[in-house]
Length: 420
Image 1 (cartoon, rainbow, N blue to C red):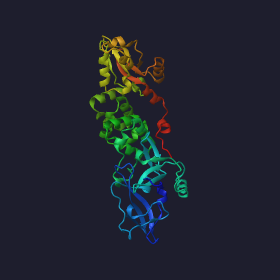
Image 2: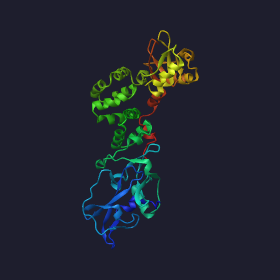
Image 3: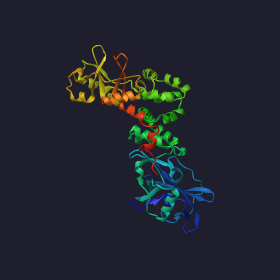
Image 4: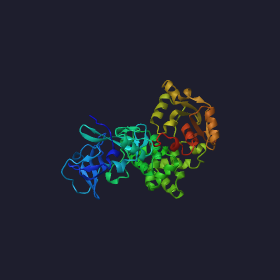
């Protein structure tokens, strides 16, 4: 059974009195222990008696919702309070700080912490992400004890940033962040402070593929920001997991004296692709293209093509089209994934493909690429060599959107912008 919600601001600074009503001190903070419970239990209070901060267990004080908090025992332990691993001070550590709302991947700012007595114990049940100043929120809370002035977010759906509390030895769980799309995680990093962003990056580093995916989604400013503090081998490890075109773009953004050492640390096949892409202007088709795609001879079957797509390590957006090579290994056509799915498995790729391959060249600028892709309704445009023999890479619609959107668009318009 749940009692009325109690605001943290209604408890902090309340007097602690003994059984006779004499003042012993005042409540400085409440201590919660984070763990597997969706609603962390309150394990004690920090009470200031004179100049000392003392620990009083929660079961030794009366109801937290009153005007006074009464000591149930006969004496207060005079040992100074010392935080134990896994403990958070609700007011000091969490109030007015950011949380991640895992529902939709948004940042919220805690203007109030909500408590409730559930089945005989006090628990942290939510965060008030109300708008308005903190002073106004506290005054409102004290005038209207059981009212809320904003949006209450269930604690079970949020995660606090606690890197600023080293003694707590707690971090954002990777398993929770992994439920979000890499673009949502990147939005969070860009909306958060640097310290908070580092905490997110540290959490996703448990999964190198996810870490690389998040870095690909970050804007260049944040990519560089989070690589500056890393060693060359650590930076190379991140770039090795990124798509070659994204890795090439990021290397260009690094300080010049770091580019070659980091490039030399990349695995050889990946390094060769990145070096090739660095030869092109970043705002041409050569600079935008991904060198990974699927191409097969015209004699291959539809079943062969679908297997090649299923096993390819090329970016998903590049796999919407399979390119067809003629008997001289020249690029001669393309078959969309949809046409392959609809065709008979034993049909030849040449019979399914569209001839007269619409394409771009490596030195084409952005307007020329846009015009060709728009005219031919291409989501994937092959970049052909000057002799029209082979496909050097592919430019995809998302490559163009990333370049066309204004700098800082994610920070200004992204869904992770902090609430309150």
